[in-house]
Length: 464
Image (cartoon, rainbow, N blue to C red; front, top):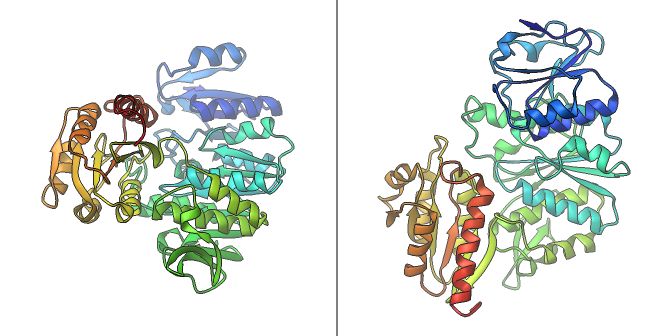
């Protein structure tokens, strides 16, 4: 058994976050070792070259003696319940009094010299994180944006040393190893089934995300989803709620009607018309409300926030408008890797169409319950075209409610959609599944979608 020397920090996981952890520890001059459960993890040779004096262990963690380790820092992809780590979550460093088993965000919190806005949720967190970052920049604030989105949080410390505000997208994997974040504003957007292969059920998944509220000064939560609300003992002094309903109090942000138009409102105060937003769909109206609520807590300029919402056109692979061909709108929502994300897209886009949805879905379902999709699809969809490993599971759930068809792959599904779509329809790639059965990742899946329809757009003679 390999013993970790006394005073040494052990970093587990050689992925993107693990590498950022190593860079951070090296900058601090701390002694560290590396471990990975895989025999030959990607990037091993590069790490050996970069840190020639650092020992790297590959294999089961049960082969390590962790008794004398100063601290064990996990990459987000490493389950704290991995054999060899049993019981460590309840042990503390006798010198510092801090937990011995932590993640990258705990190290970030110790080193950060500026306030933190932290954003989590099963869906939409990348969109809201980006919106809040754009609002901060438009307000003249030196904000650094990253975390689970873009730049690793620890790299922001070196890349943006003059940051006045850190805006972080955080996953449940990152939060479950963060003792206390102490954010200026913590945001929990929504909760739906995802990552249940890692967490022991929805209660554990939700509890990991609710750790975002520990020691927070303020919070933004989903007024329509009590699972996003902080638990007793960790309730921030100031809380705002966003909702699809008409708001009644200043702490509520919602959708009201004035002069026959949908308005984004704070209490009885209108902020801007929904039709002014650069993003379409009710789910994006809610994202905008959440971002506005964060901006109010952080003191952003109101006119700047409004202009960002007018200008922002969304992120790639997240309800991305790709083309209009023969009167049919094609939307790339490949980032929708769980049921909740697809449900939000269907419910957000369906009511606003002149025609019907044609949904392209399938892939690796991660054991999810697809039944919540049936009712809204029965209302808004012309047909659902299924592909990938778990297409049959989706079909079993949906075929009793509307027309479905199984195809060999995404390209076949797109060709079929092109043939059956009618003017006013929307072809929506929102798979409700992970992509790893047929693609490298969701980005490649979305790129295939975009490239295919863009080639047809040229054939059809340009946008219609």
